[in-house]
Image 1 (cartoon, rainbow, N blue to C red):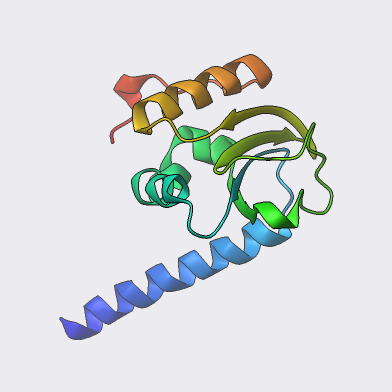
Image 2 (image 1 turned 180 degrees about the horizontal axis):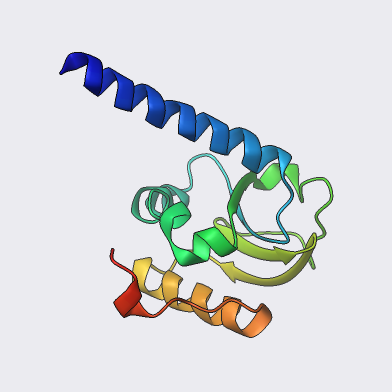
Length: 135
């Protein structure tokens, strides 16, 4: 039992590490960049409420998340329409250029709604039928 538990834990860790390596080396056409800063309570709230489920969501699969510090500015190869002045700021980029943003974290329900509207308006994202998705 302990061996089986360790094996599944080791596999999960290896899968997470492989995803991290691939996601840092692979450029995505559409990304969601979260601009944060140390001590931001809304950043921490987002990370605890949304962070664990975002990569598993249709939105997260379509627009993978990259987290950057506000003091670092736009990541290399990314152009923001204007600097981020609030944290968190969620900047949607396509092919390295900003196409939309959400400033602040208005709570889980509003975040998903705002993100969904932005993805639908600015990209070819289509959320799967709820009947086909089990959460």
